[in-house]
Picture 1 (cartoon, rainbow, N blue to C red):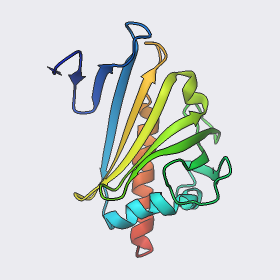
Picture 2 (picture 1 turned 90 degrees about the vertical axis):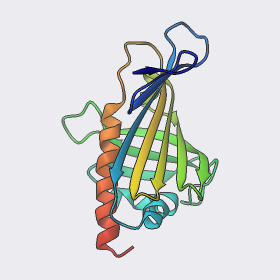
Picture 3 (picture 1 turned 30 degrees about the vertical axis):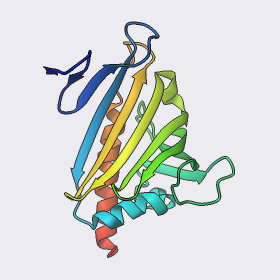
Picture 4 (picture 1 turned 120 degrees about the vertical axis):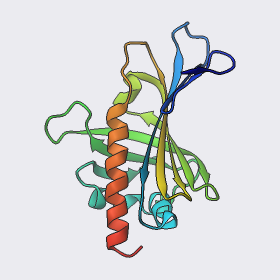
Length: 181
């Protein structure tokens, strides 16, 4: 690990930085998962921006349901749009699901980047905040960045969810290539 300025430490997959003064232990953490994709990067980004409603049919083993929330009428991810998603549960041995409500915080079409913030769900029992960003790079990779603030040091890292993103990336990539997107 290399010491940067302030109390910030960086590794290839995580960065730790003090956020606000709740206690000396309050830390913001960041984890990244990048996977190569073979389909068109534009198609991959478009799928998550405009066709997220297809996730249960494309990735049914991971995403059970997805729905519009709080009066939203469009599936297009725009700033402020809200959705509810049910995904494979982290603590499950069976086919149980966790339900989360999220809001789209930012959309950058030029950078092919969408940022989602968790509003409701079991993860907020362990984390004060939980934000996920998808960026589809021109280097044919899909990169998910998870930023979170642990409620206390005993809260684990959300590695299970990064593994789900890896599975989603591979499944969506195969679907888009198989269907000539």
